Image 1 (cartoon, rainbow, N blue to C red):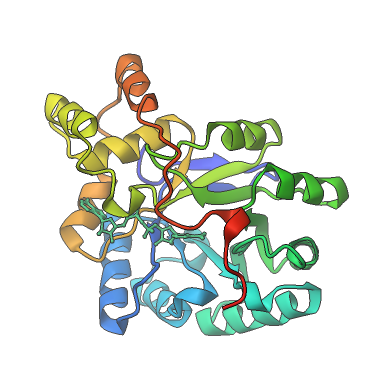
Image 2 (tube, rainbow, N blue to C red):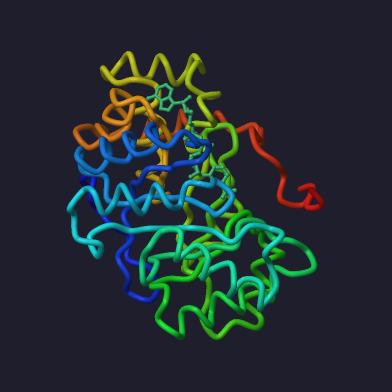
Length: 276
Ligand code: NAD
């Protein structure tokens, strides 16, 4: 495995296992710099969302890099108050315009708004049929959401992006996704930094000469989880990607598995406040 290794989605599309998350990158120059650093270092996937307000910068940084568009995997998401069939189609047009692109690699329902998530996914299927996106997906969907979608879908969701890190290992949901050939992407793969002082992880890193962040990110990859760690700091952008020169042993993976405490740093998909 290397920085540009991909996972083959159920429709044959190759999705990079590693990418840059750009949540809370609201400063224009900082965002352009972070993406520039990441792409120069070899990152080939960017995860944004209409909510993040930086789709324009993502598009600009990608064009500036000179890397062919088709070599970079771009994901964005439809925000909660844009959901429903027609609204999603309109929101997609806006995202595409902001990014200044003519297609996207992956489009996700950001959260499962109870009244509209099924219709939202139906619109995503249409975008796929029209070849405006190369893969379909959802985010923050639990088994019960996916079951509803799977019951009706002509094109099954290819990706589910959920909060996942050593303190929230999401084993039942990951197993469900595996069973249905849905790739799992971890958001907050570092628990927003909240798992990096864990004594077990720090000690494990010391044993092998790696930082806690590197141990955690490597653990994700060895679990077949795709990752999109976020940082605007050039040294961390590089550090996070330097995880391809070591392997965690079975015993080290087993130790990591003991750290689960079902602890979220973000919101719970079934208790999300959708009315803001
Ligand atoms: P993360 O787990 O990637 O942590 C990011 C934070 O960890 C940084 O702000 C920084 O403070 C720290 N950090 C990063 N690298 C470090 C290093 N090497 N050493 C020490 N500290 C380090 O959290 P995130 O930003 O919440 O998640 C990553 C991406 O996931 C987001 O940018 C976004 O693209 C996506 N996301 C999606 C959803 C969703 O609902 N779908 C929600 C949250 C985030």
